[in-house]
Image (cartoon, rainbow, N blue to C red):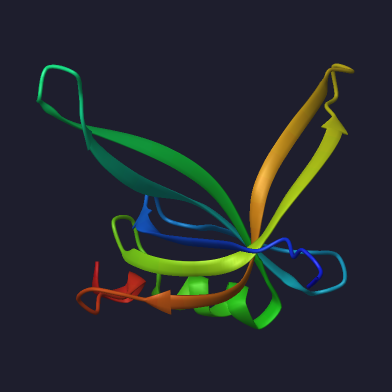
Amino acid sequence: MYAMKNKVQLIGNLGQAPEVKTTETGKKLAQFSVATNESYQNAQGEKVTETQWHQVVAWGKLAEIVEKYLVKGKEVAIEGKLVNRNYTDKQGVKHYVTEVVASDLLMLGPNKTAQAE
């Protein structure tokens, strides 16, 4: 049997402009949300569309591409892995985060850049 892999593939639209930071070591980090839609027919025969929001993180060269080309509303295909982490804020409250760490990104739809908007 093949080993199971932690792999996520999403196609959706950016919810807002990416937030890009540079770490103390000089590595770029881009964080953004992607909305995916799923449609189905309910018991009354009506079409229902549900939106799911996914938090995505890109590092290094991929973060630079995100910073240069991705804008709010841009359609993208993301491939990566699902990561769970936690942190404690300044008030001592522990937070749990689930996010997709992107390993590949494909821009879909019309070409718009951050400079064009």
